Length: 238
Ligand code: UDP
Image (tube, rainbow, N blue to C red; front, side):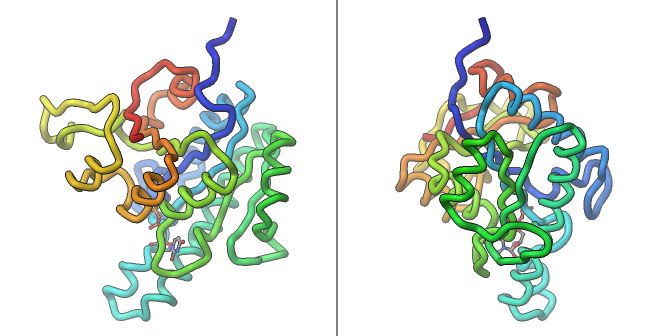
């Protein structure tokens, strides 16, 4: 018998940079396809899935404003970048036969659906993977905060943050070989130690609403499905 699922509905957050592969900008279609295959494995387990993808592989508002752009305009460019990533992931998932909907916080009716909470929930109930684009729709926020917000609105059991490493470590495991991975850590510890898990406003929002956050590696094939089956390595922030 298959292992019981940790959560029946989750939100997967990935950074835009995860879509770059070994390139230095934009989307690398084979990498997007590889991550889509990870998502499909979890979908095949019967998990209801939401996705939030960042935009840092294309544009970050802070970078633009550091170079003299008005911050709000630069942030809107960042939000548009997340829409491109969402469309790239939608295409890769549908190539694998997974039904999806892209839902944007900023209406773009020719491209995707507008965000209507109850409609998004209905898509999940019907087994569609829902990809939330354009962040929260507001400048001065990040897609980490958008992921936390949507996970709560969609009644997800947890946010799953897929990263390069299999959890949160006491130090950077790439430069500090004896760094230890936390199995479990509190929101406050993440904030006090300034561990780079998600940005502070997202962590605080998750804490105030008791939304668990799971950090795991998206690099091993089958890793996402293993974590949701209660196996595999990860850190849970709760
Ligand atoms: N952004 C925003 N509001 C949001 C979400 C995102 O203004 O609710 C902008 C912001 O400029 C951000 C960019 O979109 O830098 C890309 O998102 P993020 O930096 O979170 O992407 P990631 O680091 O996850 O790739």
